[in-house]
Length: 207
Image 1 (tube, rainbow, N blue to C red):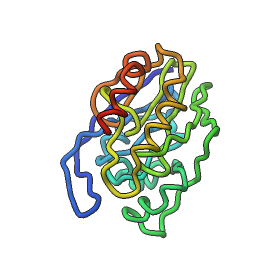
Image 2 (cartoon, rainbow, N blue to C red):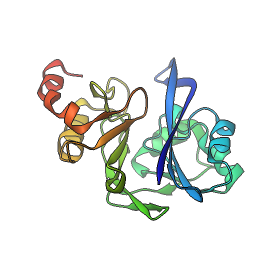
Image 3 (tube, rainbow, N blue to C red):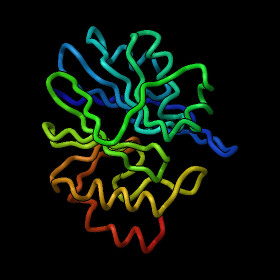
Image 4 (cartoon, helix red, strand yellow):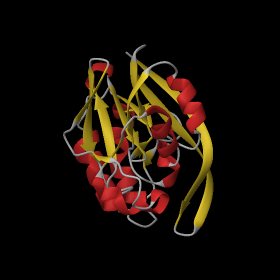
């Protein structure tokens, strides 16, 4: 069981603005089957990283366009289902309209791959349907844009809430074992133990 990482580049668009971004695409599995977490920007590159393995699912930590804009093409190429928390429906439709559908993720769901379970934690705040994926067998959690090295994800745009993301981080993520590695949607990985001492600092600064 391994964790693979691919960095893809493209644009994030919301509220009339566009920003150039680099996204982390995570592949969790073994030599036979794998899941992709956040199919961003480049479906062909992600497909090549999957290789000969069966793609069991394309999991979206949330539906901002930079995290889902390669999901449709990757699903078409592989037949894999797209999984998303339905509270992000409004963001999903900004990218795909209502024609392309996804399978709903819910808090507590377990996604099985290669004999290992990825447990879904609903961690809203950056987006209403944001989820994190805890993989105890790997000592890891995939947080999308909820928790980064240095603090919470951005909450200054539509459908986001600073108070909500702080509650998600405090109540759902910082309670995980301190040695848990945090694999993020952008930038470097960190750990629960490295981030937990700074919670009050984030609350005080307001972002």
